Image (cartoon, rainbow, N blue to C red; front, top):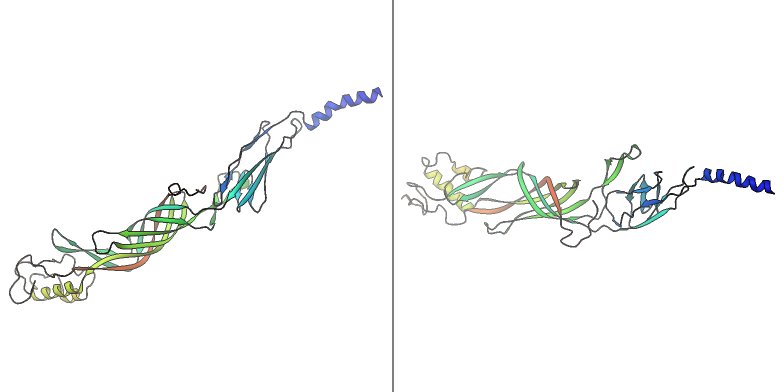
Length: 323
């Protein structure tokens, strides 16, 4: 009997050594509740033994793990367990479990500041220079830069793209969340009879954190000479060829682009049929046409450009997704 007891006492340290005798503790902080639409969350779990900690996330319908990267799959409760099985020196550590709640994504609200190009057929937009009293034309159309300022609302769908990840070789690629917004941009002016002089609405796609690609339909206001002014200008040109050698009456009647660039809105000295008609020249400075010289029109087209999103979530107390 004594021999049996002695054998047990002799082998007991060896058995304990084989299973590990030193305790270890896992440190695993809760990453916090998440909002659906956030990018992958990096988890940090360590043991004081310096042994690698194994992470497991359940259920897979709500969250998944690849290494230490947690991907949000759906709304719900995600349970993450950190464990370390020990080795010949360390005993198995007590598992640490963290529970996070994944909430539905609330559409974000962004201020859109951008620049784009209007894709449409060219058109001349005229303004009256009040100093020189002439019509000044400028082209609107393709390759015409347009500044944008508006508001966008995040769409509730998930759009993901494969993006190179800066992690280990076992996890080189990841699904990066890229939100899309529907935006509207309005243009106003106090210098015209119509306060609203154009608008653009469309979609933005997140290229980087502070850079979006935008595409949309735009309606741009432009001014062109009114029919009354066009007829009066054509009559003056036809009867004063020496005063207006660079202008063509038929071109002005058809209102071709560029036909009125630099044309005066007031009579010049010696002009016939100006400011009342007849064969007597009108006084210099008499209005060529007493009605509205230009009329407002709108032209539609495609707007393509880039924008910088500025989140307004804090202003409206909207939960912000971790993008």
